Image (cartoon, rainbow, N blue to C red):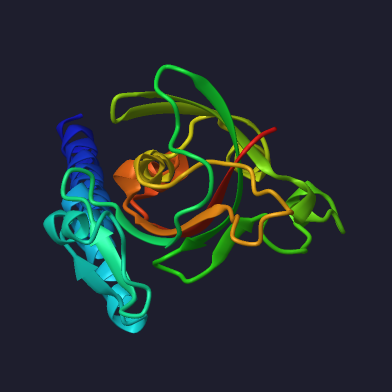
Length: 240
């Protein structure tokens, strides 16, 4: 009987050693997986640094001259196209170039105005054009052959002092991003350009046009969640 007990104990000891070895291997593998995950994990700070690097590279690549708000105001709230100037707004980090001031007048205060836009949205980090309605093109996600130039973006805007609130009523931004929220960056120019309706009888009448570099904090929900900066070219026109 004692011999049987000793044999049984030895078997238990062998099984116990094997289990400990197996547990050690599992723990080691888990540690490797966790370490690899930590190595690939990007903090918000890392993503913001990557975003800023992408913006700076974009500015350098396109020969953009960045001016501050003091210089911008001294120039009569204008940017010099010949020098490819963009003003950087320190409060929100948006860069803006006014290509055309537009006709008509600035948005009235405490009045809801429908504004029509044509635009191009480009991912600054990848260089890809994401969505646009400023040219005759098709968008496969909306159906083969659909001409996006037919889809003017319409947003409802209210100005209170220098504060603007807006929401998309229709258009490509609304359809593509699935949200009525207007990016904060889109509203920045509305304090500086005129929103009118060009009269065909007047040769000098033109829609307002701007170029923008928009950091994620002033962009769409998609931009915000991925910490991605976008470049825009946008025209603004008052709806009849």
